[in-house]
Length: 418
Image (tube, rainbow, N blue to C red):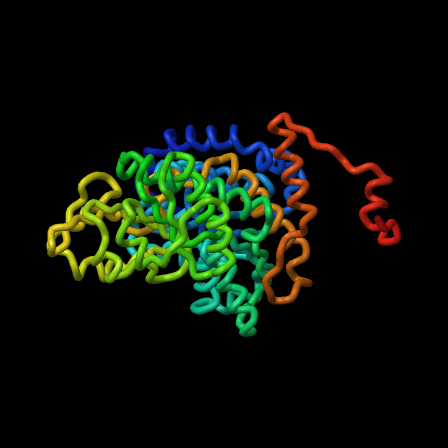
């Protein structure tokens, strides 16, 4: 049997061109590849990955392999795999099981295949692979040095597992590194979500009432980019401090019950289920667009929408028109899954450069120290954030100041007074 399953291996040449473009925009990760290609610190390690199969992911996979790792990969979302990129990875010898549009059963089948070679390290986006190890293959955990987690949703769940004493190996929360959450989540999600909305709908953003559910880092990025394109942005929140921040940054804040009546475009970015449900669809304007940029597709309750629908059709790619019983139309983009990946290409390479540099360095730390770590969730050191940021600035032709020895001394001199 082959060690891959992709949509069409003939797409490999096209995918390789996209990967090469991403490599030209990811200088930090490419510098790590150059640094470790000879010493091969991952030699003897088997890395199972479950993360969106994009051109940027391919750069990470190739970098891990260049540093000596054996790799087996699957996609972490049924609609996010770029088939030409998956083909390019397969053609280069990567064990990969991913194609666009796979079913739920196929999704978990693919994860099972990545675990067949008994990994020593795992890399996850949403923790589905980690949960599969824990729920079905706990015997594999004894050989796993540790794993990394890319997303806010996954980190929350893994911390809950650790608090409950159920975590079987140490995890590094890559998501919690500043060079991940304050760039990938804000600027990456903001730009790529608007990109997905435009590809799926081609609507004018300016002048629209644009509802963003959730004002965390992802929601803040979406709100900022929508405002920049001339939208009237409305934020819905359950956290008082987040709502206050949105208000002071110039956005209207109201409950979803009220926003549903006036919104033209809705984007959920919460990581929580049932953000938009039946009673919200009941009052939406004719022609409202609804999409999600949180991790899972449960934020928009499509079962409730189906119950109110008398007809449904795909009116354009990644855009389904639901005609309600009273004649109003609601348009769901990307089947309620991640709009930036279902309808666009995911985050720009420039921000994934830093996120995936953190993934590489997190896995390297686990390869070296995982056996001595407790079974809990760790963060990467802040010094690593600063080093990645300095490298990124250097590749952009930018320089910054440095504190003098006198300033360093002053910063910790509690006797200096006023």
